[in-house]
Length: 77
Image 1 (cartoon, rainbow, N blue to C red):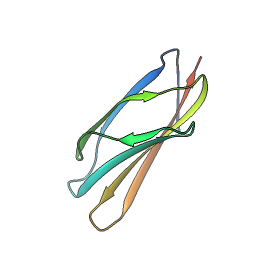
Image 2: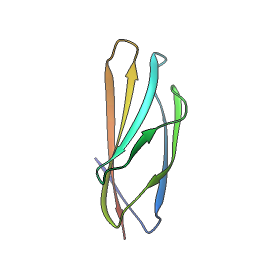
Image 3: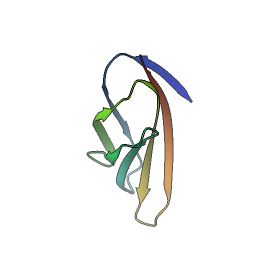
């Protein structure tokens, strides 16, 4: 797992997924969640960060209901 440190109150994440992905979502361990823009090339902007540890998990879903995920821990100072 990747760990980042920042003093910012939001973060943006982006990435790529396979061609069969139909949606990409994100959740923060502090309670917020949302949808990323795009599918095979996606961006999630304005993810709110609370002071302390925030674990952001990104999930990609395909039409068959299969999913894959990646997580990053962001420590806001």
